Length: 246
Ligand SMILES: [Zn+2]
Ligand SMILES: [Zn+2]
Image (tube, rainbow, N blue to C red):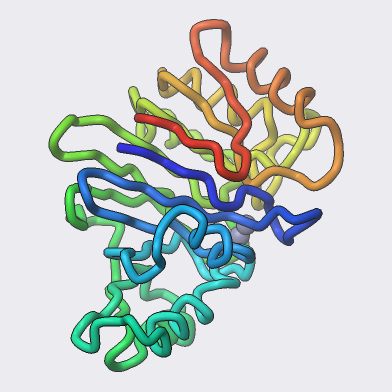
């Protein structure tokens, strides 16, 4: 499967870079993971938004859904849209208002996902784990059925030991790393050190730092994570347009 970074800043866009959003592709299936600000213009450089097969959301903070509404308008108003096509949008159901916004008749349809249930979306099998965050948020373990390859996306989360099992042996661990070392046990986000420690505990193959801060030296962030992860784990920074083959 192929992961393309559309946006990887936390909280708000900055200097032409948007917030959390990824395009995950397998065979001909196109899954959008989160829809942060600047998603839609960036997505159009990679794929016709009408070619999306589904959208999945980790949670309903603005930096993860800012472009969802305009994506729905795109599906509603684009002249080439197949009148029969409805875009499935997967989200948790524990926020009634936001979940209800996923559905626009004839345009998009909200589908709930649940922690206890494995979800099949196209070529992917997905399981969920609630994270540590000020609002309800879920991490996703996404398995490509045909190859067994695993992507774990943390969503937004403060340090949570159970990532060691949830992300076990993942081929790529995409981890919210909004904070530099020294801010451990934050209530909303990992620090670089914690991302590295969890990657090591889970024995993942590659750690990709994302939900990046707007300020500070990102090379330092990466070095801190690498130090905690140990030399056996490859650590990379997410960046807009970067593609990871998993
Ligand atoms: Zn966020
Ligand atoms: Zn958040």
